[in-house]
Length: 528
Image 1 (cartoon, rainbow, N blue to C red):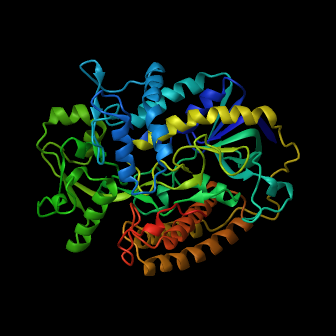
Image 2 (cartoon, rainbow, N blue to C red):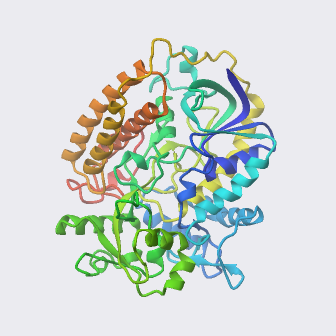
Image 3 (cartoon, rainbow, N blue to C red):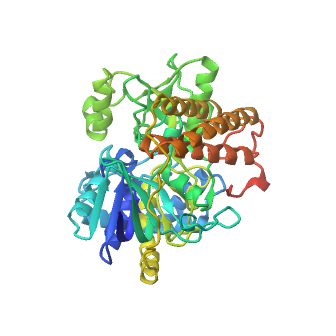
């Protein structure tokens, strides 16, 4: 069975939905999402959208802050373009019905680590949820958009599936859509498209501790890599400094905005430690704060540090951080009187599928936007709240490119049906769950906040064995979300380890004990 759409969108976060709404005015759109349409990294983004709104702020200041955070690896032209277009995207969202927090009838602008001005547009502490609601309300009502919930993209369709040779030396030249698993019927369908938008989000679940939801298994990066698309900067994985340390919290994120509101970091003896690491103290960039916490934990043998915002009243905290306050309260913590136990957790992948500022990948007919990409905006470290900004700005820039390609491309009707002959449903799912747990532990222990040549080599050997076992399991089994996710997670782990092994310096989010200094000759992206 084959579906046909002018535009196929894989993913239902801010990037995918924003793009879908724009191109739906010009043709049919299919949106494929592996869970409910609202389940995305966007939905969990607490902080906000960085944009120059205040007259006391400036584009130059935002550009400068982004470049500083990116540690010499940002593409300044890309940074400037995205920052300039940010205010317009905010205005459009508000016109579409987004309800951002206001103060005295003006947008309330927060501040987060690495920013030199108050420029974080937010909806209390649930900005991502408000952006997602705004976009989804329109998507669900649009006659040209069909949303496929609980459908899982297995592979991008390229020349490889037409029997042609595809390799790194001869990469795929065209994308014709995707093979998609209907989770209810357990059948794989061909979804053919003139243009495919990859907006599948990040890969935080590759690590044992992450702020990301269960869906963030790196599917888009892995699919694009198998299609031989260019990938870059996978060594730069951002660890959010403050996820809630509690057995029932599943690494719940304590937004950077809490530190922006004056919260202090203390070790378990109550000592404030950030002044000893950076002049900006708690408002230093995330990589610096995460490494400082990691250093405290390793020095002292502790499992967590404390975040202290007890100087604020209960009413103030409930007004500004209702989601966080409610979550902490449900676990017996009162933010106004209790210290909050926190620990770093994998949060955002700054690398990904290489695109230009119009979202074009190295494969014709395949666009990509959002966390799945490497655009040059984030460099070696993402400045807080620049991610939703990137998704909203570049998804709109992608529209012109998409329309141009759709006008000259045709559906590839000779794409074969999915062939699962000779496979069977596996009898021992424990093999999948065990390999998944082992992979996440290996990545956390050896490829985390602080790395070394020895740790990376251990990770390479162990992930290679997991890859071989999982590929054998995949070939023998009928396709399933569980096996495909594991396969994708291993591919992403390999890319992170390989990229980290190539960079022989410490820069931004990549810290190597063997190479603790910046090296001028290493000031370039890591392409794979």
